Image: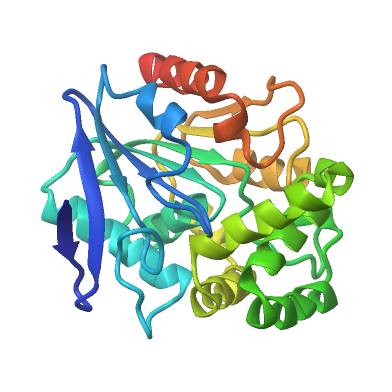
Length: 275
């Protein structure tokens, strides 16, 4: 197992696979490098693939401070600098895309060649615009109620959020299936980590960071997206380079990397080949 130590002394787990152009994958909240294995495996024969666990997740340290989106961008910079990487393609899902926006805001695009973001707005709140979470419908009151659920039962909180705004099809599963999912979500991370990043994601307005994106940018949008076209159009209108939208992924939700790994990977490879 490989680890690197961040500038604030947190050990981050990472893996390197293959050779060629460097792709760094940034996973979302309550995930890890072990999730979406089929998706990552699509790239290992043709590229140098770097997977890592964001702080508080997987095999990385559980931190007691610096648990915010700004620090996640700094962690990504620590990885790029420690491994002496250039011309990197960053690929992020959900909070992983927010990590990329944060990185760009703080460090620019000098080390980057491309960016791929999957179903993530640069601003999650719905206070005056409709580009926030749940297609503009998740209110600040809903967000505050999430904290009660997180600190009461982190597994149930993750399940509740997933069912209500990410994949409403979960409403039709059996009680036994629901129990197993809650147990699975409960193992993904702890309440402090989930609450810290959930809070920071809602507090972080990264729209100004999008103006700093000067490399080709691809947005992956599922069939049932967590974010509306308002968010996509903001990205399209503010990225200072080529913008590509891929949204032909039938019957997919926010978990698109798991649901259509081959199809999404093919779209990303086409983007890499064209830009």
